Length: 159
Image (cartoon, rainbow, N blue to C red):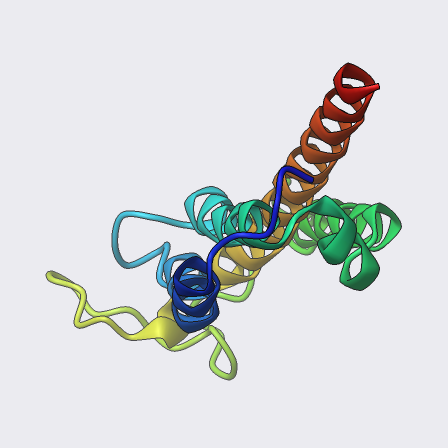
């Protein structure tokens, strides 16, 4: 590692990290109501992960988050997305069987301007969550791998 970041950088990272993650999950959850969704929200959460890597370094972050854990989360998101597609297979693949059925994510939708009710999306919100998990884990693995490779190259250049 090049060196430890300053106390100011570490303090600001500690303050804004949680806000970035919460905003990323907000974008995932509201993807059917506003611009955003699983991919965009997952990329925001992964950028928070990249901020941690830059601030604290690869060695410290690898003690808390392993590539294997991120791979399991990525696979889970992918399996969930495909499974949600099969929920409505009696009609067609990706048929929104939950919409207008009552219960969780099944409230009837209002004709006209959407009032912002999260409960009206049917399987779309579930798919956004699955895509968000897949993207945040995949980008997390990529960033972690690139950071580890950069550190190896840096150590070879020193010796």
